[in-house]
Image 1 (cartoon, rainbow, N blue to C red):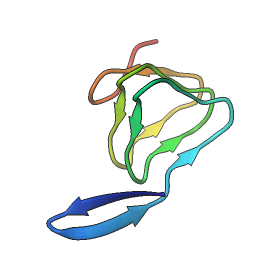
Image 2: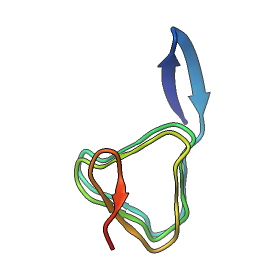
Image 3: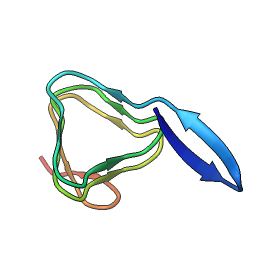
Length: 68
């Protein structure tokens, strides 16, 4: 579960992280995102709200972009 404040309104949304996903140091996944499995997030990567990362992919940067 993750939270955001949007226009002074507190909102909660789940984060789904499937099997064999690796979140490296200081990577950040925002509310509502789905990581479908076997993902690798490099350090300091930011996954934005409601993003869906397909299986077996590698991500880096702010905002996250696919690098494989």
